[in-house]
Amino acid sequence: MIKGLVITPPTLGRISIGRVVEKNGKRLPEKDDQFTITSQIQNKDGWIKHPLDEQLRANVPNQKLRSIPVRMIFNDPDLNLRAEYTLFDRQTRRPVCVGDGQTCQRLTNQGVEQHPCPSPDLCPLAQGGHCKPYGRLHVNLDESDEFGTFIFRTTGFNSIRTLAARLSYYHAASNGLLSCLPLQLTLRGKSTTQSYRQPVYYVDLTLREGVDLQSAIHTAREIDKQTKQSGFNQEALDQMARQGFANAKFEMDIEEGLDVVEEFHQREEQQQSVVQNESFDIQQSLKGSVTALN
Image (cartoon, rainbow, N blue to C red; front, side, top):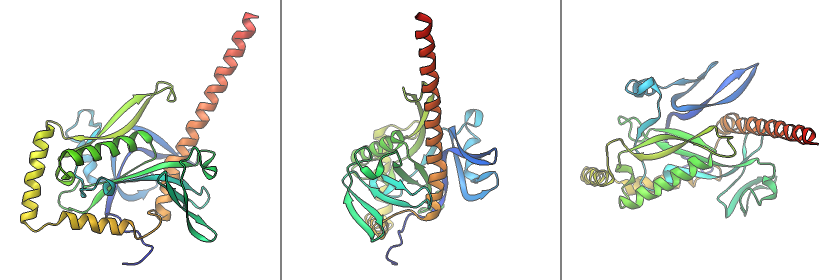
């Protein structure tokens, strides 16, 4: 295996809850209230939809895709969801520092160095909001390709925290049979003070519609029994995936860095601009009220 080359699950396409659109000659991120499944090919209008997108929409009301049946290819939750704090260089679009809240790998003129990772709020290098949590969830949608995955990328705390909790809970409850459970990605919305009561969408992981936990565990045990009888070795698969992820300091390449900066960081800059404008409007309104009272 070539050292320094991270080996990730084969990617067949992407799952997103937003898109990049062109406005006034600029490519800008735009939120959405549904999932979109795309291929890995882009044209001038953006990412080309994968055939699975149309298939899944055919049987849902208003063709709003808000749940997707999925299967995990690994039993270890940390292999299905990779998440860490990541600081990108805005010019080169490359990750320059990746950490887990305890230690980080940082790219310097002397090479890759290891440093303490105190989290973005306490790290001097991360001041200005440029270091964000960054998660990648690999799921299987196509049963004809057991190891082919679709990747959901996010920098949202809500999605990362919820997915991490669900994966660890289902792993524990099923006695480690996470890859055998019938699961689905579910889009949820909530409003917060920071969102000014506008809905914020995030991704959850649940059992498929009509399946309770006991039935799901029973099904998982049967699947595990059948696959073992056929000679399938899930433990060896998980171990090989660990070795592949550990084969490089940074899991991302330049193309993924470009996508992340374009899809997420520009959106955050837009949100910060909106918040600043609304705060200015509120301040002006309050000044006007005080003047009227005087």
